[in-house]
Length: 293
Image (cartoon, rainbow, N blue to C red; front, side, top):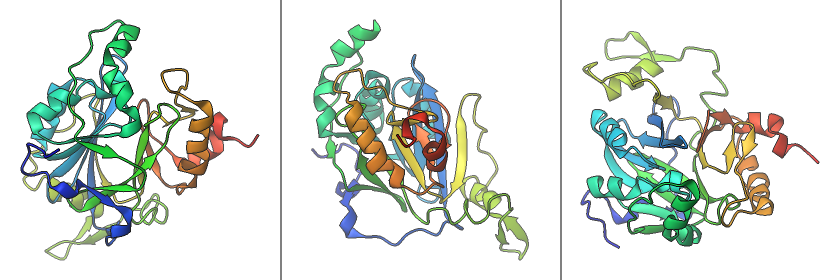
């Protein structure tokens, strides 16, 4: 289905076999803003390119006004709206955000029945069902989402729901965080003076130093290009997604974790659908669900 947003190209989803040159972790930054939204405090993530201002919004579960305020504050253009799965707390704001931005809504095919059953989900929580919208593009294993100079691989991770997906940004995995932990990395600026890469990235995003600081409860980061995983409700810090709701399967989620996510580098930063960030390495060694039997 064509998008109403002329800035959204048809190639937001590409195949992994297309291939692209990996970005340099030492010079390229990533804007990542996370806000917990709604009664269940779903982590909504805004992932932006500092150069082009293009962004993805992942799991806009509620409080669309706050999300739009952040998009406007950072002068971002929403390229796509991605649902990691179709539970009500992750999709409650899809329709409104789509209406305001015109960006296409992306979801895995296997969660469409769950999305269409929003009345049932709302009744379970005792709340009013949110307005639904069309799903513009269907995600599948191996798709690559592209915006600005970045790309994210789609990993189908069923178990919490049949169509749960995770997004993985793999470029130059670990080159900064693994080799330089605890060090202040610097390069030469235009005047030949040393400038920290973190400061350089901030300068690229906010050249006039006028950008507002994140409000309380918002995580506002400009990250070096280390590996990042947006895991939805498949993997949490110290836990995994529940499997006792519609279409959940303990067998499937454990298979998704062990055969897919646990094959990612230990340095990968994990941004779960709820709660604090973690890493693949931490979960491999400390998560009680992932220890050898």
